[in-house]
Image (cartoon, rainbow, N blue to C red; front, side):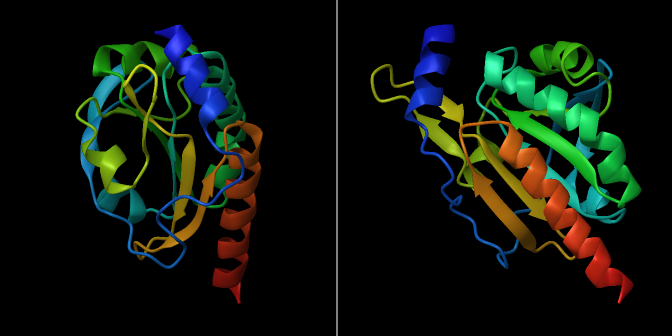
Length: 180
């Protein structure tokens, strides 16, 4: 499975925009999630009532780039919270995997959702099929969603760092615009 995930990461295009664009309505969803090893039902609608949501999709928990991305989002969680935003990561992993990943790699700072049926992943045009093996994964795409449910930013990039940097910048711009 790691070989498939590695192949996936090398095949994903770099710095392209995701299929859903800024200004589009973000598909509403609820899914099983875990934070700090505890399961709960995550609702996008409820999260947006508190402020912007950074929704990021990633291929596979406990793989190298996905782990790095989780660490970087965990480190930035306080910055997002200070601007009124929250973060959720989503992959096709099962909830048992997400319980462990939420504690070990997300450092209990933000939730990760389980979407093994690809319902949310497909709604956000974030699925990716590895041509050789035919396996499906979530592509590495991040969205920043405004409280009104509109997408503020969409970024597809195979690396981890640009997602955090872009999301912080977009949330900062959103917050500054709200203050005017």
